[in-house]
Structures are given as structure tokens and as C-alpha cells.
Length: 109
Length: 113
Image (cartoon, rainbow over all chains, first blue to last red; front, side, top):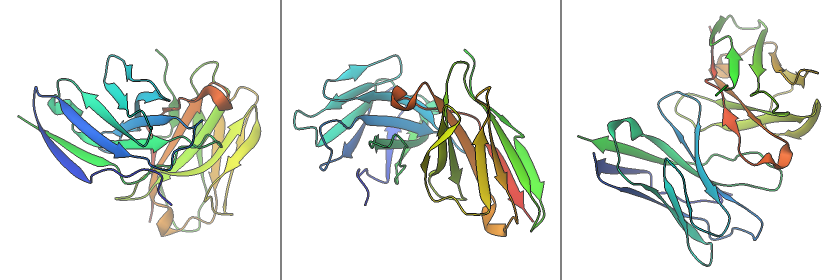
């Protein structure tokens, strides 16, 4: 069973913020939300992760709802190089990453 | 910063041949994960090692085996190759099982003819 649900695709204008939603309604208390992205056929790239609080790093911000049932990844100023498949992953107790069907983000000039 | 190294980057084999893929984790990382990504598919977990012991196992065929060595590098051995084994194989490493963040290598593209 997929633990996360993401829209299959979305477009974003270059220079604008991209907001990527993810639903994880069955998340348990000790499970983290991870975001990775994969630019065509390259190795998945770690973006950010969080447990309860909102997080920000040089790449993105992660907003997690208070009930932890959903989250949003924010790319503040999307560039053409941000075109990729974005995966929202709930990290299970056995530590492996279970990739579901992510969101294909296309940034347009 | 040093990243995960995988070799070879590309490999072409015939059916029923064997292949060995190598992974060198980020220095001081002691946990290695292997993932397989078929054409048009999402990465799928195969197997992981922590401190040279198998820590978890996914949908890895019996024809595949893997190990982690004393220097923490890992090798994925694939025998009796089938056409369906053609895929990208990614290795990731982390610091400890509870190290949370896995960092991925560039992958090995295996083509079975």
C-alpha cells in the first residue's frame, strides 16, 4: 500500500515558487517525511526531511500540517534545472526508502 | 564533498552472463542500500547492509547476491542475467541505520542483450 499520494504532474513558471503537495494520512508518530528528486536518469537527490516542524534549507522549505497528514514542498524560485520527478516518502521503521509515483515537475521559461 | 561512487557506469551483458556492480559509499558511511529502477519505473529497494551485515531485504531475485566488505564498499553480483534485469542500479549510503538521510550514487546502467 502506498503511504503517500502526490499529483502525477505539475507545471511551474521559471522564477516563481513551486508548491508540491503530498498526502500521508496514515503516517505514524515516529515516521519522517522525506523529499527526494530525480533529474532524468540521475541518482535521486536528497532535498529535505522533517518530522513535525517546518524545515528550510538552501534548496527548499517543507511545511508539515499540524496533524502530520499532509505536507508541502516549496521551491522558492524555480529554475529550469528544477525540472525533475519529485518523490515524497514516508520513512518506514526498517529504514529503506519506498519510492511511489512521484510528481513530475516541469519548469517552463 | 565526496559522493557515492558506482562502477561501472554502463555495462552491457548477454543473457545468462554474470555481472558485478560496485559501490563505494561516502567516507565514514557504514550503511549501503541497493535500488533497481526499470525503464519508466520508480526505484525499488533491493537490499541493504549495515556494518557488513545484511540489514534488510526487498524484492531481490535469488539470482542476485550482495555483500559489504571491511572497507564498507559493497558489490552486487547478478547471475544468469535476463532481459528484464536491464535497469538502472543505484547505490545509496548513510551513516548508520538510523542515520536517516541516504545519499545516492549516479547509478550503473545495465543492459542485457
